[in-house]
Length: 236
Image (cartoon, rainbow, N blue to C red; front, side, top):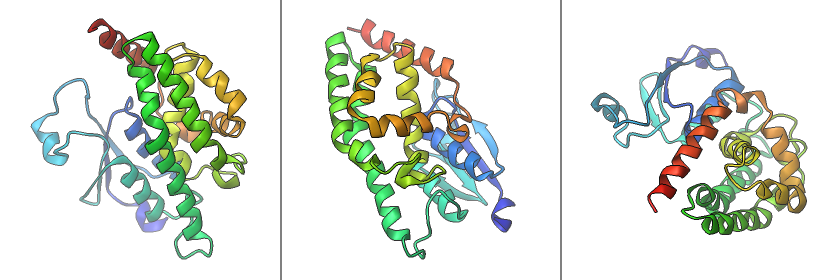
């Protein structure tokens, strides 16, 4: 990785944010040194940070003076700039098709499945939560389960994580952590084990991978989600 390893990299982030978590997974997996600036998401963004990212979001990457925003773009940038096992080059014979498969998998997760997961967490009533849980599992079984038929252990039958795990890992990790602690119905993961065995086997590998776990503070995520739920339901 020669010249890239010497790049001047600053990541504006927050360890509780699943989107910023993507950047940490790719940086950890590739062993890229970087400077970190923590942005407090519980208070209004400072004028200084809004000059860096007018949307006030994390992550923001400053790479040799270049401002790169949006977590999926940041992750893709590193995967392309530092060639590795995460994703093949477009010049590789199988590169374009493998990249297309990964892109479709990630799109399926976020366009068809993830919205139901947010509804589980943010449901105003128990009925809302139960309905969202059913919708989440149904969507995952339909959209994601077939795409993991050859996972072994990671996407596409790879022995090491790919960009598919980088982009979805933070959300898979939260799914199992929140279910384990009863923040979302435990029947969600129980049903996934039964009805989505490909997904469940793959997910068990994802949630224990060192790069995926690199910044994850399970207690903080669980307690923060509980507080958010309580606030939503108290407003009813």
